[in-house]
Length: 138
Image (cartoon, rainbow, N blue to C red; front, side):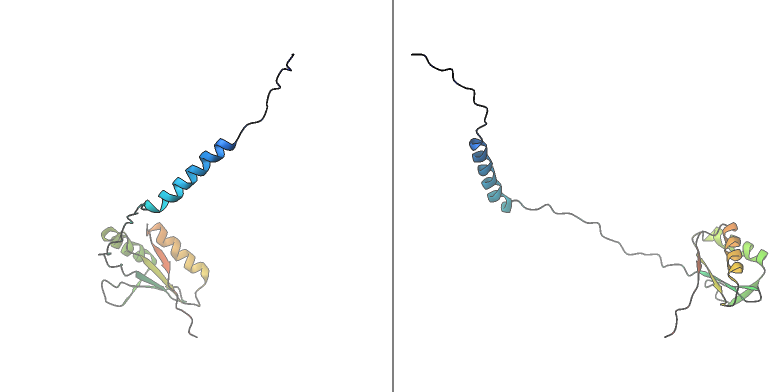
């Protein structure tokens, strides 16, 4: 009797792979609740021991005159010229380089004058410059 040559099989039997996958799934489902999740130790914020510095207020009036209100000296407003303002702020910045300076301009002052004053403060190497504004009253 002549036998026919066997044809090659070109299919993959995936049943054993499915069995292995189901066993692994059962193992993971059983062991997952037993594993403790990792604890993350977050850094805590310490108390800020340094009190925030009170800013020096440079007041700009509608007529262009300047006055300085220094909270550390506590002597009220001191009228200054633009050249004196630069010298005053440079001496203050030498002792306290992070001392903020706030411009308190009258609402009738031209915006261009405020920008000139800000430019003057930048030329005096003032690092922290701000604008003072009052909240609207309802």
